[in-house]
Length: 162
Image 1: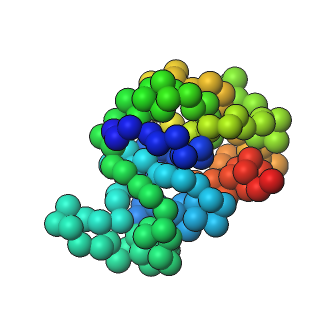
Image 2: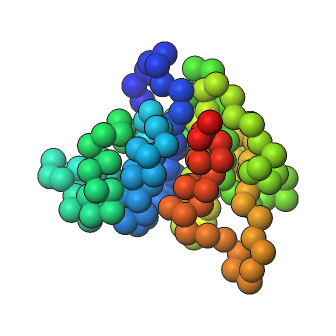
Image 3: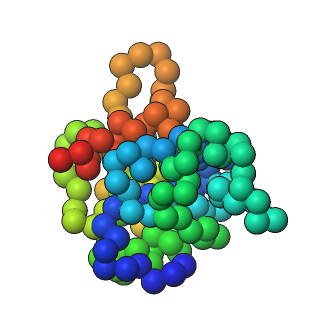
């Protein structure tokens, strides 16, 4: 992972997001709210494929945001979170756990890294062990969760639209 510049205040860590359309939608929301950087970890697809070509499937839902939001590929979300923590970031995971708190009860720090996990498995236990806080979005219907790209929009606008 590259050294974090002092200007970076709001970042996302995407851990093993599998859908290119979700990644693109997350880029679009990140651009809209002013996220400084996105770390694409594990199997999370990047806007550029391994041959250096622009991924049309990411671009389809990002609508250009993949070019306006800084991003970096990082093999390990845990190592990325640890490095950010050393740089003074508060590490926040969006996940449903027995210890998670309602996202409306959390106030972000000046430097905040928000972790989003895999569409099926969520944020890994290793990564949850690094977090400063775990927040969730309470569900009132019969479904247990929202799509990751929808969840991140709800959370980011609550935290950063000031």
